[in-house]
Length: 351
Image 1 (cartoon, rainbow, N blue to C red):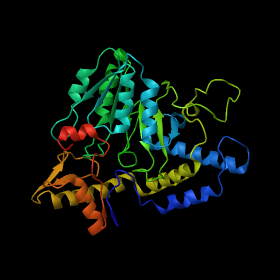
Image 2: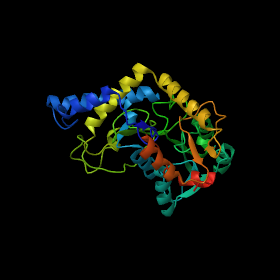
Image 3: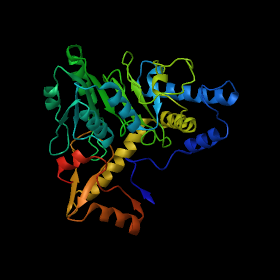
Image 4: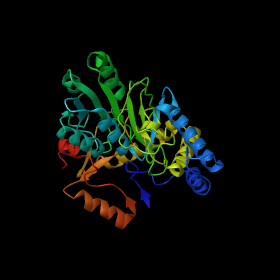
């Protein structure tokens, strides 16, 4: 099979990742829940992976990285753990339902929501975003790269804008890095990112069920879940220290072991080299189909930097029919349908 669905998940993992998960399944205990060698082994691999992610994202220290099951959990933590009734939050039409649905939930509870539009090529209106900021704006939350169009959003520009106004309004920048973590360089300090949400199973090349959230020092987030932590057993309150504050229950140690191996692969191979290969394949495909009669391509291809995603329709054919035929007749796996990005489809006129 020719696999072209990496925006959903990378299927072909490095062999090192597979080997690490298999090894962990037969050797790893429960981190922080005992003093056996198996438990300590789990603690070490989780600590080392935390350190590796902090290095990759330029975090001030590894304690600011908490593990989650995926970007969806990370985004729910950020949105529901920060926003209150009466707060104002700004987002964009580019967002995945992992951002939109939690925001709609908070809107029902009294949070004010502003959704910024885009141009005809799917790029967000940054000027409109700045104009939407007001006294009760607590958060701007946006994607770093659209899973639908592949458009890259320069969140450093948004971060600079947000932090220029942060003293007056106290607002935070939260970024969904689902499509960019492990592919594009991300430095949370240089890019003025307060909260970074990422998943392990896409560009980071790790197993499904792994992900995380970076929270800038000094920012307190209400945990999405509470319970066992391995520390402060006799307290009625869940620990407030990072990362334990956001890591109730047993972590996916086996998956994190795979993510640890994936980070080693990324460092050895170089994310710049991986991105260059992906971009070359993207441009090869784009240039091969853009002039085919009936093909309409969506997204901004004047961008120098973009995710390696090409989205198109063929004449009046239903996208699901095209995808099915590619799979059944040619063994090519693609993604059709709504892509969990309803507002972006509506903006492009493809709903």
